[in-house]
Length: 168
Image (cartoon, rainbow, N blue to C red; front, side, top):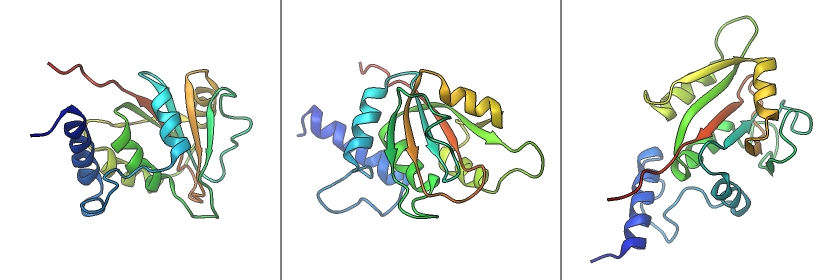
């Protein structure tokens, strides 16, 4: 028989396994997100808070709310990518809306297909123009800005944190 905490951990582990099959089936840590500052920032975010996963070209100093926690995961160009961060973040918090930066002209960025595959059909991408996207990220409800090394153009994604329905 398991207590409530074990059931909660099992639920998180199941969610993590569904997002990243085979990656978290064994070992002590049963959760795909182990970065302490990012975990703390997401835990403090709350319903309606925004999380920006920013590519390497994004200006974190001028186009993010100064109140947002800035988490640096940009190791080198191409490492880590936004979609590598997106999977563990989706396992950690519920997401109710997703915005992406749409190019002014030209085809849709290839990375949008990757995001759609990770997000599933219940969370469609909502495009914003570049300046609209920057404005949205400067709003005070941006709680977390994650700087990645993703060198693909228009790889930025803005997540709105959802809520967990009460049990019972």
